[in-house]
Length: 207
Ligand SMILES: C[S@@+](CC[C@H](N)C(=O)[O-])C[C@H]1O[C@@H](n2cnc3c(N)ncnc32)[C@H](O)[C@@H]1O
Image 1 (tube, rainbow, N blue to C red):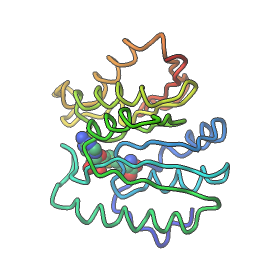
Image 2 (tube, rainbow, N blue to C red):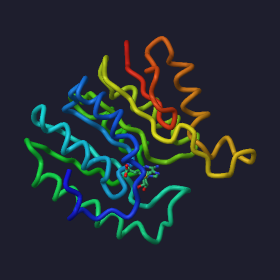
Image 3 (cartoon, rainbow, N blue to C red):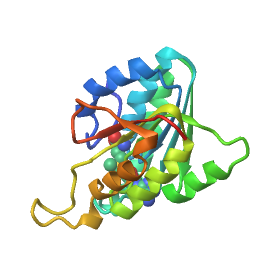
Image 4 (cartoon, helix red, strand yellow):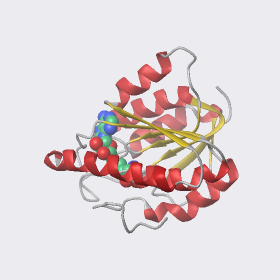
């Protein structure tokens, strides 16, 4: 993707591209849910990459209010950059794409998607919203309902903590929530081996 006209102030995504390229080539997801979009860096990657396989539907959920790890006063500008970057990515996409922006807390948005008539299911769900343990666990459990069997769920920041090593607050980091989720859902999931451990990749094997 030629990034010259995109406006990004942070890059938490590029380190994932090598692995995502392989997983996306394998799964060719065309119906994707992203929880936590920020300036749209991961969403723009998905638009650019997945439209090569067919018409893409991408749902982006974000409050655009930031999480515990963001400066809330900058978020209006972040949302403006998201809108601009997505418009640019759509214009340059090699194929058709529909992007649905849902500006809401993820628990509210996911509950509404689950409740909607003719409930949608997704091929890929990327969980990169709030990084507190209660929120990540809620996102995981609700997102599982929306993932199709053989679909892929990716958690970002598996090893991230707000506080420095040795002083972590276990409720202020994703790992305890992701571990609880994959332990309790282990008969319905397959965790991918051999992937970088700053993310966790798992496939839904049964509902
Ligand atoms: C790490 S950023 C996402 C980065 C993005 N995926 C990328 O690769 O550039 C996390 C985002 O989650 C959003 N967020 C935090 N808590 C949320 C919640 N409870 N519901 C929805 N979005 C939330 C924040 O506003 C922020 O934009």
